[in-house]
Image 1 (tube, rainbow, N blue to C red):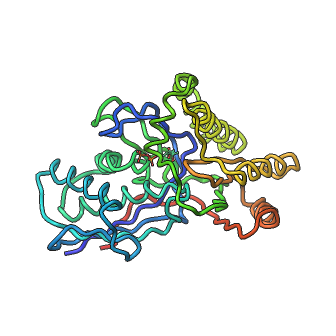
Image 2: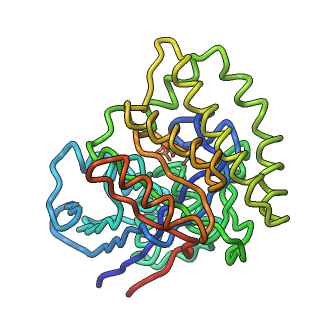
Length: 319
Ligand code: DP6
């Protein structure tokens, strides 16, 4: 018997960057994301002699499997089920290049697990299970726009759909400037960021920025959505720079790309950037501007890979 789930990755417009509980992955703030159609993970689970994990058809070594097996062990304990499993994951996401592949990976894994053991969980509970694997995965259970409410314990910290089928002219251009594996994981980065003297201010702004973002979405206001998303991402990266010791995910090309977005905006081509735990930027824009933005980025950077994404669906099951 084999069970397969597909989950799409998501981009946070209001970021999760700080944990209240590292083991349960309870966040210090609520976050809001857009699920993306262009990037997803398919994960299948079947019975086997030994525990095995294959990523993109390659058997993974001990280091790579540790987090996945630990997660499976946690879920097996939680539900009182057992057995060795072979897990196959195919990532349709450039792995570890700042495109948050862990969001789709752990959402798909949680989905495949619950199907394999025939556990009767609804999407709210599934979101909580995905959250334990990786915080951002809690939001990938849902399509469109999703909110992960921080809650205060395992029961109350889950994501839900704000609008699964938004009727908004909004696109994301993932600009792949640097596809090297990132050096500081999100888990480590958000832990270190808490030493910033501005961390408390970052937390205090969460309620306000989240409600402004919800307003922007409800009023179909792209300008407001872009402005808040860009500010929120810049705050997250300012926290990193001012941590003690400070660090950054930015590379010289990241700054170059930020400046280019600012220049484009001055020229009337409306676009905004957001950046996760890696050097690549993602551009938020509208349909009429995509061609021009692509052309300009391709002429400014050598071998740049730009992938267009729009709204993606929530979790689905393939067998
Ligand atoms: C910058 O969900 O990868 O993408 O819970 O430690 O696995 P863990 O972190 P993860 O962090 C994502 C951080 C982010 C912002 C976001 O997606 O909200």
